[in-house]
Structures are given as structure tokens and as C-alpha cells.
Image (tube, rainbow, N blue to C red; front, top):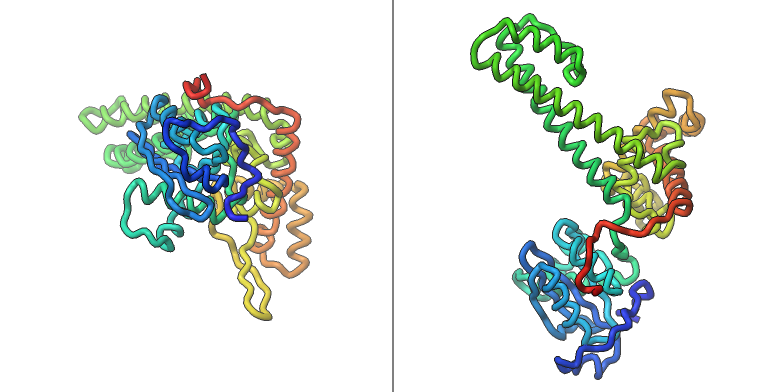
Length: 382
């Protein structure tokens, strides 16, 4: 039956009778609350099981506004929230709704785009977007991911992203420094990828001391900036290594999976239990092929979508195992004997490693279950 979602628990809250819940008394069915999130405000649209609009409310994007949205929703006893997965805008709302005992599901932006194209409502507004979010939940039902409170993987994600930003900033400064060095002394050779090390930076600094002028001064400042960034990057890598060993020891033991690779897998996977199977995880990370059959022709094609950061991490693990004679080498050679090209064999190995990573993440989750955090203190739960 459309509108019945076993994954959305009844919050158990009595309806708010300050507004007359005519629709709920007539139907007694599940009401879907679609939310369009913005920086300053959130728009909530309630629809019935047939997609008809019941009511609309716009609230401020604050804890007080979230409480108002919850009070608005309490007039329907059976309800489920659908929130577009724009985490920087929706994270606080989701956390406070979850802490208040509400059932929340994520609607990805690409599903929203399809609903906009197929919807009968013309134009664009916050209310129309919230309506489309709710109707996606009606259409997709229990296949949508369930929202959960942020756990330790959130900290790993923040650290990984911050490290990547610092590495990118360091690379920009290194490239700028190289052009300044070429302008000052074209014959001065600096080995590729060496400027992230202290020895090469010291050599460059000594060379710049023999030059005067603005270019030399800027070059010296860049050397100092690169040195500071090196220390910060190393500090973050050390912190990530400690977190990875504590959170996912089984994954970290996988041959070819270093601390940074494991941290990327944890950060991008978030909560591994949100995937119902290893096949769902493979589709999420883009290692599962996409069906492309028609009539009597049965075939699949390459999946160029999915989470490319997880896909790249699996690629690194596979290459490392092949080069160092790890367990992946035997499977890689088996695929070559089956007349796969090297590229096809590496793709097949990535699909195999996806299952291995999924199994190890499940083992680590079972052995190290921690309560979710990161959502902060909710005024809704008070």
C-alpha cells in the first residue's frame, strides 16, 4: 500500500489539537512531511497517502523553528519526515527530529530533480520543492536511506576533508613557489614532489637568501607557509591513524589499506548498517555494473557513478595487493586467464574488494558500537 513504510517508526506523540486535524481524522493514514531546507528557513509540506497537499508551514532554521515544525506535525498521529539530503543545511534539523523520536528519511538531490521534471506543479518555490521531496518518499518508500544521528565517522569525515583542503592549499603554494624559483634561477633544479619535505625546503630557503627583491621575499614566505602546512598535515594524519585503529581495526588490517585509505572509507561510508546488503554497498560506491539488457540481449555496462572517493580507495587497495603479491593478485590473475583485459580485471577486483571492505566494516561495527553524537543538544527533546 502506498504510504506504508515499515522503516518509519511512529513517534508516539499525541496530535496537537490547536489546529483541527481534519485530514487525519478522515483518513487515519500515514502523513508524509516533506522539508525543503535553506540557511535561514525550512518549509514543511504535509501530504496524504495519495500525494494531496494537507498543509504547509515555513519555520526559521533554528532550534525554536524546529520545535515549531514538530508542533505543526503533531496533529497527525502517523507521520514520517522526508528531508532533502543537503547535509550542511539539514543536519541540525535531522539531529533534533531524531532526538525527539521522529522517523526521518533522506531524499537525494538527483531523485528530487526527476520528481521536478515529472511533477504537475509548474514553477519553483520552497513549497513546491518541499512537496516534491514528500512525493519522492511516496514513490520510493522504504528504499530511501534512514537518517541517523552522526557517530564517530562524522569526526573522521571532518578530519579527512580538512586534511584534503590543507593538501590542496599546500599544492597551490608549491606550484607558485616553483614559478618564482624559475624566475630567479632557471637552472635551479627541484625534484618533483620533493617540496613537501623539510630537506628540499631548507635547500630552497638557503638559495633564496642570496637574492634580493619582492620575488625572493614572496618565495621565502611561501617556504614558511609550506613548512607550516606540512606540520599540520602530518598532525592530522597522525590523529586519523589513531582514530582508524580504534574504530575499524579489522579494516585497517586489510592488506593495502593504510590509515588514510581506511579513514576515507569510514568517512564516505558513514554508517555501514544503512546498506541492506553488500550489493547495495557496491552500487553506492560504483563498483557494481549497471544492467543494460534489452529483449534477448543480456548485458551490463560500466558504472561511472557512485561514490568516486570510495571507488578510488578500493582502486588503491587493489593496486597495492597486485604489486605486493597480496590476496588480490591471485584473483587478478584468474580474471586474466578468463580472457579479461587488465582494465577489466582491475574493475572485477574492485568489485571483489568492495565485498571484503563491507564485511570488515560490519565486523568492526558489531565489535565497536558507539552511540551517535555530533548532533548537539536538542531543545526538541527537552
